[in-house]
Length: 454
Ligand code: 5AD
Ligand code: SF4
Image 1 (cartoon, rainbow, N blue to C red):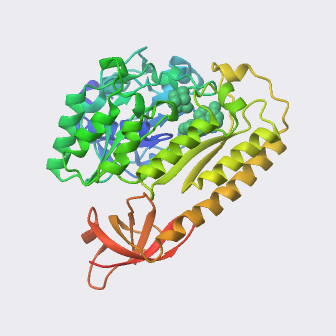
Image 2 (image 1 turned 90 degrees about the vertical axis):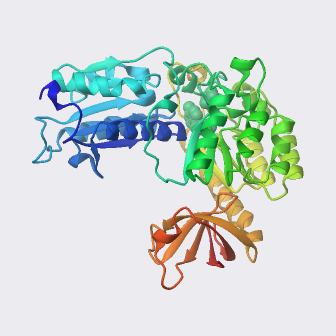
Image 3 (image 1 turned 90 degrees about the horizontal axis):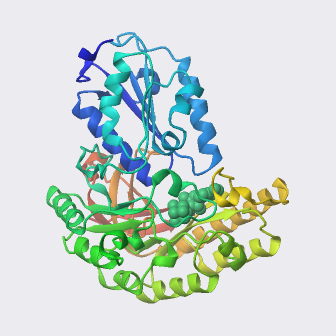
């Protein structure tokens, strides 16, 4: 291979993404860049000349999976008509940032390592790797700007993620994110508003504002958070659906809570990670709020928007968690009645303060608590969906259901999955990106089923 391979006209690529929405969005930018260079996406790593892994290290399981997948790829032959003599493997995202050159040493088939701050370097690094045998590594300590000026290849034309801030300043004691994503850095207000207006003009139906903690948006740039103002400005573009993630309870303001009652296009769904229902554990986690304060926020949200669907994250088995601490988490989950709860077993992350804490709790005890919580979560989700039966709700359709092609699948304002039979004489593609009313006939734990009315 020589440098003349660029641009990547005859090459195929696959981006494999682990982890959060921020990573998924970064992957869209990488796909956009590779496509701009002429490379063609393929569905499997085996068919790909270039494989880019966008990695996550928030829990150990994601770490282990990455090492496994990269090693497996070594035994996978290159496609017969590839113009390259070997497959180029690139690793980016949070493990790239954390491990840098060590990754290429541990995994000999890795050719490129890049971090969370330098997506835009990837094409140059790939060219370098094509030109020589040694791995090309670039990991920066701080961001070289927002990737928002890079081309993006969006999964759905009608739905866009809009990053408003990167990094995190919160240092929850269990969490690796501040170490691999860096300090919080907000994008200028006007740039975000302009992007939102451009998306709206382009026909995008749904914008999701993204940040590790959107509630503190603007603090670094303007000396005070301006998230409520930003929400109003983006809503003012007239975009049909507005959402945001993630929201740290300690920083949510009454203005943001109030926006759920006043902004019609702000969807009635909020992900508000609580992590634990025990004050003792919340303090040990450095979360900056009490159980009581969290519940008062939930009360205010429901006063502003009675039908709001809440979701949360819970960590079970934080070091030193007792049965009583767990019971408080369990009771809080039952009291709030979430639509969706993402449950995680605590995973020790070297370099975080919590990694220094000892925990005598046996693994089986933690697993048993986790299983009890999962049962409650499912029961809650089922109950939370029941009031929708008999109502008519607007659904943003995505296309055919993955399991049954005769059903359309989409999302309700509360972000529930909704299935409806495809009307006779229509194709699922006719409905992609279309918002239409559906009468809900049946509510299950993880989806609603209804009849298209339009
Ligand atoms: N162990 C388990 N779960 C974790 N999370 C973050 N760090 C850890 C960890 N060390 C969870 C939190 C966070 C979600 C994205 O991942 O619940 O909200
Ligand atoms: Fe991690 Fe806490 Fe920042 Fe969320 S707010 S990314 S849990 S440090």
